[in-house]
Each structure stands twice: as C-alpha cells, then as structure tokens.
Length: 414
Image (cartoon, rainbow, N blue to C red; front, side, top):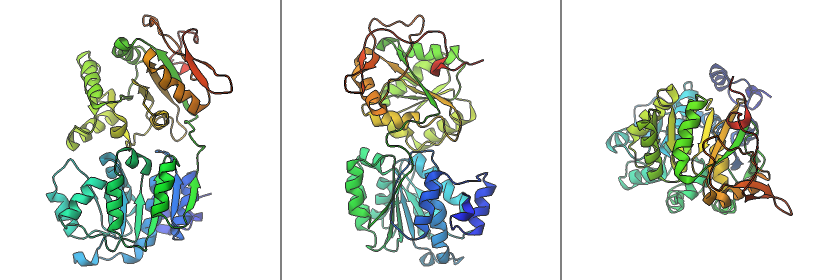
C-alpha cells in the first residue's frame, strides 16, 4: 500500500515523498482513512510508529477548506486542538504540522510551559487554526482569555496514557468542557488500559479502534540484557560499559529527577559527556541538551520517564535502565525508543538485588526471561536471575547466567 491509496490529497502525498517516506506504517494505513471519513478513532500505537503523521496528514486535508490568507484574526479561529503531555512532544508535533502543511495555508502554533507567556499570547491573538498544547499551559491561556476553543472541530489527545500517569485528568476534563459538543475526537495511547477505555468512553462517540502492535510487545529488533550489580556500583558499571564498548548516544533512565541529576554530574566529572533532562530544567536547557545529544556532543542523556516521553531520536542505539521502572509497562516504553524503523538497538538493565521484584514484573509482562550476564570486576554479593515459574511467567533467583565476554545485547562490536 502507498500513501496515494489512502485518500490523501496529491499535494500531501508529494510532501510525504519529499520527506523520504514511500509506504505508510501500519498505524497510518489503518487510521488515515478513518480520520478522513470523519470517524472518532481510538488508536493504540507506541512512540516511533508514525502515529503523528497518522493524524496530522488527514487533519490538514479535512481543514483545508478553512484555509485563507486573511489578516483578520477572526478568520483564523482554532479548528484543531492537539493536546500532548510534554513540551518535547508538543514541539515535535508542531514541527510535523509545519512540515506537512506547507501547501495548506492554515496557521499552526504550539504552546507549552517553562517559557514566557507573552510571545505565545501575541501569536494566539494573531489567529491560528491548528493549536498544539500541553494541558497546563493551554488552561493558562484560557484563563488569560487569549485562546477561544468554541470553534474546535477536531480534538486530538496524543499519548493519552501518559497524560493520565502525569495527573492531567482534571485538566483534560476542564478542556473538554470548553469545546463544542459536536466535534471529531482522536485518541492515541501506547496501551488500551482500563483507565484509557473509561476516559475514551467519556470523550469519543462510536469510535473506530486501531491496534497495530501486539499488546505489551517489546520491539523485536531490540536486544535486551540484564547486568546484576550491587546498587552502590551502578555508576561505575555504567561508565565501564560506555567506555569498554565505545557507546555513543546512550539514553539512560532513572526513576527520579534527583537521581538523574546526580548520575549525569558523576559521569561528567569522570570525563563521560553527560547531561540530565527532567521537568526542573528550563525549556532552553532541555532543548540544548537534546540538540547536543542528537549532534553527538553529549554522549549520555540521563532522563526520567516523564521527561523522555515524547523524545524522538532517530537511530538511537542504546537505552540503559539505570533503575528499573516501578511499572513494568514503562519498561516497554523505554526500550521502544531504540530499534525503530528496521534499525537494531539494545536495551541494558543494571539490576540490583532490591529490584528483583521489579525484574520479575517486567518478565511476566514480556512472558519470557531477559538474558543476563555478570561483568568481570562487578560481581555482586547477591543478584537476581530469572527462572521459570510454575504455571508460566518468571521469577528472580540468585545463581547462574549467560557466558561472559560478549557485548551488551549479545552482539559483536567488531
């Protein structure tokens, strides 16, 4: 199947080709015709599956009838509202709207927290049709009376599961109350949890469901490996692995902002270029960190789950779980950032004995054990090993392992 078979206008098909995309991804094949037909859509799609284009392209087509070149702000009311959980994702979605909207004269804008309100106020008052926003900053503008949502025709909630995780449900409900009752609703989520299904039932009308990936499936292209290690030696092991295997562009996950900052500082002092990215960093700081990481100037980017959600880094080779997440599903989100679009990648987890239960939860979700190895010089006093549970699943024990000497993920680095 090609893009021109999905019902998109010829100019959008041409722009997609100019961006280097020849065939639609599964979520694009399934969702684009449904959005073009005006259906409400509930779609399960991980980050990196092409989901942004799956709603941006048909929205541009559906709204092109409103396009005009008038200087009057009244001629440019908000027609499409795209709500996302993080600043980084907001920027990326807005960039996609700008990229694909070059031939459709609709005005896009993006608003998010962490930056001054005034420039955003001036932009909104000039009139825009497609607004990308984080919930809190959007409600700030509502309070300032600088945005009017009474003519919204299409609502998109992207990464809805993460918005619930971040406590945005009250904000989402307030936003919904400001919108016209009659509108098209599109909800994208990495999973169809019970919370997401309940929320979709209050927002979507007779939705079409799109589920393009196996439930709770980790990326098949990602080689996963566990390194048992004492908790107080995790920093040393991470530095050792980065240097030994000459790893570049390493995205490292911690559970807390404090741990991210401490780890990045520790690595940087040891000569491994590292920076932390989390919600306490200003937007310019976050942008500089991400740009440096993408350019290769920063070797290690240490992030919390909240900060990393929405990061779109092409050809990311390494993800490291410095600490396993509290929720097994977050492990899937983390490792799904590598091994995209046919590329290979590896996910390394540094696991101490106190994380045995968390490892067991991840393996139950995956329905298989993750291979593991002990690195010479870092043999822990006690460590967690996956072993089969009666009746299926896995639990953690304390012996055995795979042979030493191979690279993380079991792949040769020659």
